[in-house]
Image 1 (tube, one colour):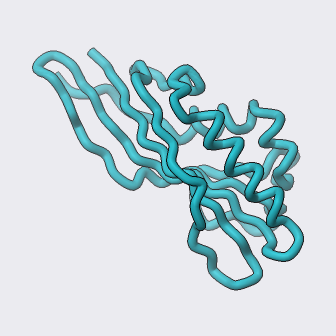
Image 2 (cartoon, one colour):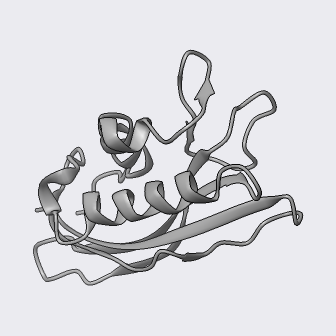
Length: 145
């Protein structure tokens, strides 16, 4: 018996893209909101932008006949330091509210979401002084038989 495949980045992206209050704070990329499931942010993407992942840690809290992965993932919001500070702060707060203790905010194929804990927002690492970043760390607990 082996654990079913776990795809969690796309469900998180879908939840953010479907939240109009968050999307209203973001730039555009390819005719949609600037929300990305890998880094670096693609050239041509407009800021503010969101990055989701990669998975920081994965712990298996499995039982005898079930699978209970727990994953930690960072969701980061980046923007231009001088012009977009408020939008970045607001988007990060809205992302925190979207996910914290809201286990039904995402649907993960093959799994039930049992808990989502969100931290922050806190400063996120940036490449240069012209950018600002805020990080919302998520710990997501899942269950599958």
